[in-house]
Image (cartoon, rainbow, N blue to C red):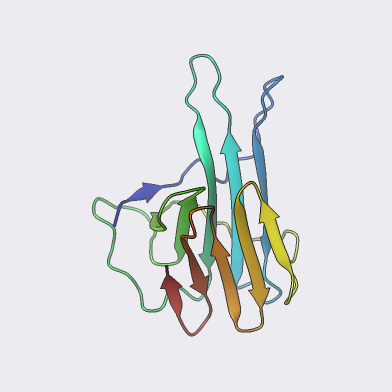
Length: 143
């Protein structure tokens, strides 16, 4: 699997005037799963970061994946994807877990090409290309 280092994905939006950065997210009712959408627009002399959706699960991915090659940070509890990419295991030094909007069971979250459905059995998220994942305390699956 490709290593994704997502150190900047959870940073608060920039205060630069005219910049269209966006960070938003949600938690499941159990608060075991937290998801963060982030998009950082290109600026002169600064890198841009494509829109990503990252979801962390406090109980960890099951089964736990192999440590991503070159990862010296936390892993095994977080997945990430772009609008049309395959899902990757996230190598990270931060978390998407925390207090934020609760996506109640039975509700769907849609944002900028990503769709997530919260159910009592777990959370399913997918992107525009149909790639995605399912997360629950019992199991996780990438598709």
